[in-house]
Length: 552
Image 1 (spheres, rainbow, N blue to C red):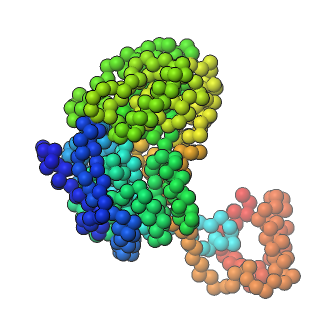
Image 2: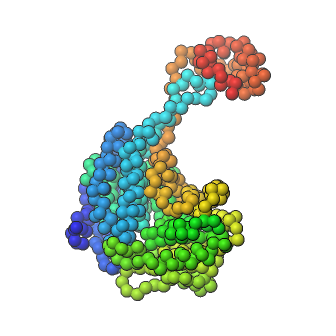
Image 3: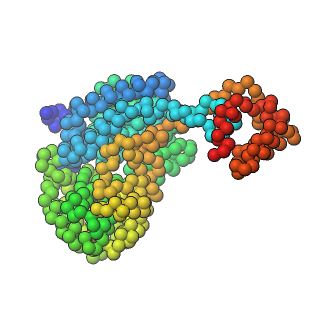
């Protein structure tokens, strides 16, 4: 296995534009969150560098957009092979730079990324072939009509640090599958992982300019969003920054897809299986040290199960091992940034001051590294920040409720709505939870894991964002949905000029023939045949072939 210095130097140390390293005038430092040591200082571009990347993507677009679905499948399959081959080194880099235990990096970063590539490499023609759509309007029955899925152009993809492999791979793969070219801006905190992904694209044989990876400081990212040659912006991150991205894009009417996080709730029915629920809540709240937009951050439990569930959750939390993410037995590593750890610590301290009880964890440990222990809270109130604002850390508040209805109502009373989960042994209760929980994704007796299912859409409601990624509906975000209709008639269409009394009689009879009750249709059809327009303009053979439509 590569040593630390060798490993860092093995990856590009600058932005990759048209498959070539392009240095910039600034630097971005990336830090090991377990030791607080600087891993590397990577050269960063300015706004002009961002424009050069867009220009490279624009030059590559004509040829890439003309590739066949089969050719794109072949590239995605080649990229999959590279990621599978390099999975261990990528997982190690995620652990070093993001603090995620290596096992977890393989589980929640590499596995979803590879599954999406495998899915698209198998199913792309089924998903994006033109879809014939026979017209419903009987006068258009002779048309050859279809929907076509055509690329948008240059897509800007701006990704966060919490899933530095999974999120970029899914979004880049879908953009490429649709025939778009890409400018990819990875998060500064995990910039080495972003550049390593860029290197895997180059290794997989991607033509120059199709994906361009840019290292940018926050202020210089504006140049990318505002570039008029960018056809769409995909942003994953905080609500505050998402609003800025949306405002800047809106100035030029550029569409955006925003995934802005959540305050996800779990609602636990009294009949939920105790052991399964305790383990599921624990993993859903604490995997990736709670730094997941879809982490469980609120749990509402019907009172009969509340005390047993709290007791079991605390027991399980105390068995978790927090430490070096490179060690195979580590369950939770450090948080990725010092700033995010401060947010978590502040929320917990405010909750404690307001009367919440900490059953385990809840303190800032001494020593190096951005560690924070897994924390279980009870006695919280809805007005507390830990129950209203995104925590994005290893904190699990549990709240007793008198009924399932109360749990659902409190779960829905949030400005966020990314995902939610229900926990029950009853299919009847499950249906109620699925129907009444307000979120973009609802799962029963699971949480978070649908991100790893490539056919499952991902996205939320309210402040959790705009649009969807993943699966067929994610692809629709990245295409121009073009309706096409072809007509080769020998006659003039019946709606063409001139307008006269005969045309009016024709239309009145057509309305009755199409929309009146069955008993009136025969008279309407007879009236239709008494017009000059019917005999000179209507394709009577087509009408006879499709006459059952008149009686539906």
